Image (cartoon, rainbow, N blue to C red; front, side, top):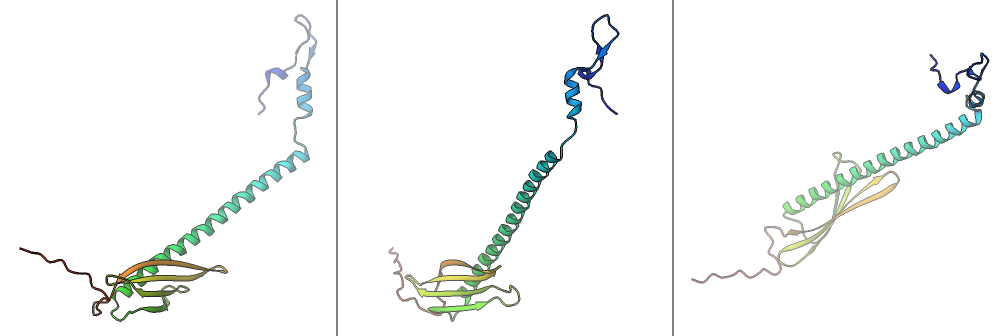
Length: 163
């Protein structure tokens, strides 16, 4: 159903005349009423560029989410290693390493432990994994108490309470 345009209706030439004529603007509009092939191609090219941009942005967000997930896993694993080292009675100064087995494949850890003051051990835990073709690392530095059976190198003086 075509809606008539009041400007393009055929109307009498003069008030008393029966002769009708068309508005000149309507004749031009009718001649240019369709789209040319060039206009269609330009519109399709603009749409294609827009679609490619949206797909690229979506792809980048998926990659960023995967990277964030792997760093979160690494942080949790580093905290797990720190807890295990804190509970282990036979951990001394040196370089320790291991993997997480089949539970978390692809992740390995390395801990560098050195003595610090006041019965603490400075511990730097590095969790490593592969993400795509690149090797990634997460490092956690903390101070853990020395083992329960071990005496610290220098014990802090205990305050005496006088009556």
